Amino acid sequence: MAGSGGYLRNLVAQTGARLVFLFTTLGVFIAIARVMGPEPFGQYSYAVTFATLFATLADFGTGAILGRELTDRRGKTDREFWGAFLWLRAASALGLVLPALVVGYLLKPELAVPLGMAALAIPVLAFRFFEPLYQVYDRPWDALPPALLGSVLYGGATAAALLAGADVVTL
Image 1 (cartoon, rainbow, N blue to C red):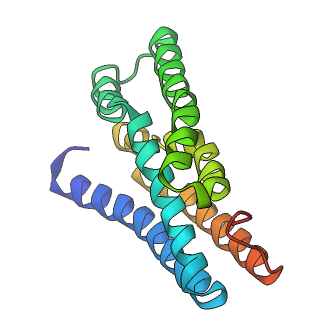
Image 2 (cartoon, rainbow, N blue to C red):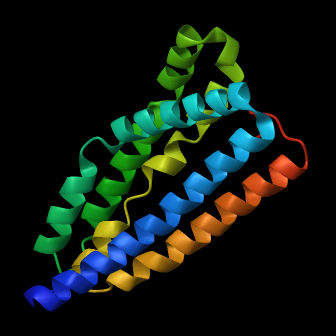
């Protein structure tokens, strides 16, 4: 995107997509705190933070590499690059599940089950790398539909679980 108009449009699109998910997460956290109380909310927050930290490790620096490579390869299709990228991403994400299970048990044995469930979410969290695709291919507004869909699914699933009387492990 050339020019300041393109930059501003890109900034608004990406910020909008992130804000949608941010406000959904805020709403989910408020709902969990209100419905379940402070102790289960703390356990949930601990598990979410735990999974997020390991997902960040699973990124293995590939997010920045992806952005750079997409810019360099713009207009080219390179199956070897994409194959290697996706395999590296999958291996790093899946490879951290077992260490996360062990670390979770050693840190808080009383939260072994919620942290175990959080560890199983690491591969899903680690595969959130699509933002650079929208940037490079001049389609910044395409970031909004996945953010909206993810927010609706996240908020809806949490609301359904809370209405059904779910515990921290279920969430």
